[in-house]
Length: 192
Image (cartoon, rainbow, N blue to C red; front, side, top):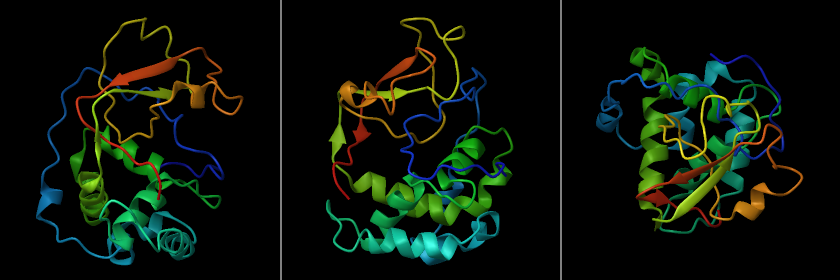
């Protein structure tokens, strides 16, 4: 599991790390057989990896009392929990994305209930077919990825349709690399 880090109050536009190899990984399909369960049930198999997870789940649920886009409270809260910074340990975001890029697919099995809930939520969202942007300030990949290069990001990542968001002092890339992602279809989360 990922080492303990402090991600409190950070938005997850900036976690691109060297997980973009050209190696083909097997598809993750077994999560599809999972039933959709509540967020509290979905995190049980991975709760041992996180401190105060019950508090964070309660916080996510309280922020998602009136979800939009036809989402249930648990579905909206799964997106919220996934994208929020956890001040008391590793984030769901980095922990799951690390495993999504790992060759050992067995490590993902405890995540299947959460992955099912999260992907069920994301599939309900409106789709965006234009350009999306994300900052890669946490690592300097400029020597590996030249202007115009194409690569596959194996994680689920936060992006923005407004490059201006990344031009703010909070995000403007410290290593000079802004990743432009052209996706055929992307779930668009406007408000939670």
